[in-house]
Image (cartoon, rainbow, N blue to C red; front, side, top):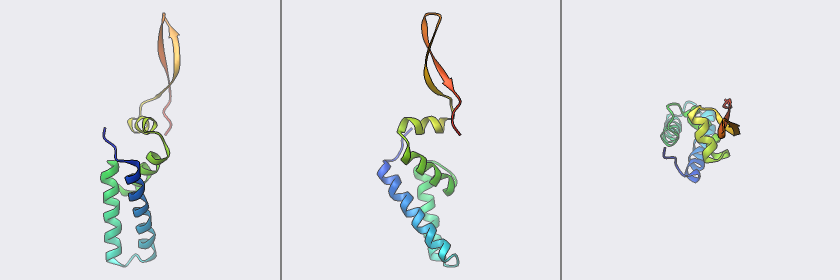
Length: 99
């Protein structure tokens, strides 16, 4: 899976949040709303999400975690927590994935 550079995600997330504040301050302004929606769409494309709110949440998670943790969270599989010896070979112990 290809992921964008964290610097680009951070830049687009800042842009989205800035336009969100402007849009909430003047919701009747069509130009502001259009720019806000464009910034949300860009974030959706970057993060591979269908909803701008989900894309913003995913961007925040991506920026505060390591790449491996982020990919495991997106995958939805349990995370290995350690190795346990069974029958002479090591077997990975799995824990429940954090929501």
